[in-house]
Amino acid sequence: MATAVSRPCAGRSRDILWRVLGWRIVASIVWSVLFLPICTTVFIIFSRIDLFHPIQWLSDSFSDLYSSYVIFYFLLLSVVIIIISIFNVEFYAVVPSIPCSRLALIGKIIHPQQLMHSFIHAAMGMVMAWCAAVITQGQYSFLVVPCTGTNSFGSPAAQTCLNEYHLFFLLTGAFMGYSYSLLYFVNNMNYLPFPIIQQYKFLRFRRSLLLLVKHSCVESLFLVRNFCILYYFLEETAFQTPKSSQMPRPSVPPLVKTSLFSSKLSTPDVVSPFGTPFGSSVMNRMAGIFDVNTCYGSPQSPQLIRRGPRLWTSASDQQMTEFSNPSPSTSISAEGKTMRQPSVIYSWIQNKREQIKNFLSKRVLIMYFFSKHPEASIQAVFSDAQMHIWALEGLSHLVAASFTEDRFGVVQTTLPAILNTLLTLQEAVDKYFKLPHASSKPPRISGSLVDTSYKTLRFAFRASLKTAIYRITTTFGEHLNAVQASAEHQKRLQQFLEFKE
Image (tube, rainbow, N blue to C red; front, side, top):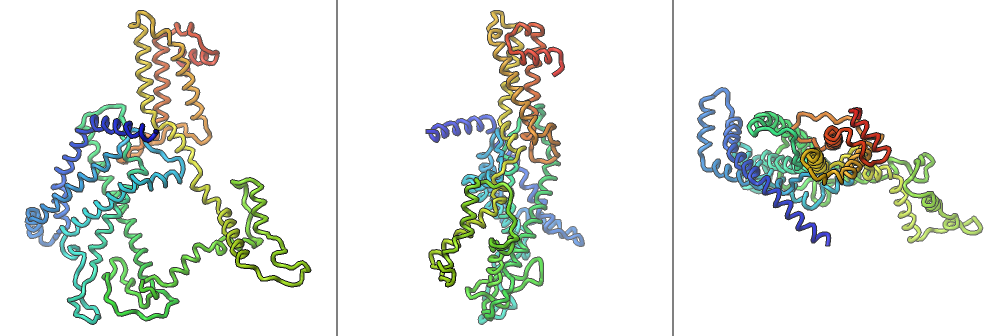
């Protein structure tokens, strides 16, 4: 029933979003496509830079602009922009999604819709990287190239190898596309803020242009740096020579050329019995990672430090103590002289008990994912405060206007209830601001392109609430003394009348 009701609501909200933002979305896509030739021209000029032959450099660059393959890639990139824009629009929201814990953040990232968004962006990033690699020409043009200088049974020209330069371009595009999608949801880039001060479009465009260029360059360099580090370590892991294996290297042609980053990384001398570069040393390393005894000591070791308060009750701790200290009768006979060989079932139960105990000994990691961040929890409470801000402004203006325009006093009959509601709301808001982990001052908004105004919604809500009460008290003045309210509310109203709040 809830699903059936939520679907029409989601459809109506999407219709309203398209009515309000439809022409803006279409205009942004059109402007992005119109700026694409300029960006393509700049990319071609810089990719063929030759300072020692400037005339030849510029003539070759502009001649490539009118070639058929560049026009085809230009049309392909236009389709990519349209697809990315459509998928981004589907996730636009006026209420930010703020995860209160790390587990909630992981759940937000691995949501099926978010995974589809990430997959599409990774694919589109790979397409854009492929277009950039082919436009650059030279050693980046093709993914598969003829192998030269290889010792194989056939002719060197008959063998083909993967072009690592081209492969690096494709993987970089996929990584940047996925990273953008990840940051899109983590930083709430799909949140549509409502600026208090409305500005002309040209002024906003002029103010945001340099900021957009700076943000794009910095983020691109940041992502490329991260991928280079990741690519280096993954390649080093893949080409690491296993020491424990003694099998000779099979005579197969290499699939990947020399590394882009280190000449020391080459094809391994030996491989595992499975025919892959991963040897037994990698498996030993993985086994060392999951071996708890190497880090925390044996469960029977006296060096194992007992932790503080646990998530479960003392009864469960007592049970775990009994599990870890089984009865001596299982291993010693009644006379205490002869030893009995443990059965297979007993060994299996003991193994499972040790595994459970090791799992419970790592409850700090569980708390790391389940613990809620106080600041994020408060931000989640006020995530939809923008609608309440508009409601407060509209209600206070109507009540203030009724003082001179409501001749029959209809609004005045509900004025005590309105004031009591506003004052009760102010008390509740003040309690949130008095929490030990709550910030009393709004955070400084950086000059980044990512909008973080949702983090200051509670401060805007408190200011709007106080402004709404002041608007009513300054309009009615001393007439509010006749309003029926509790002693605490009367005291607060007097503070507003005296401008002491």
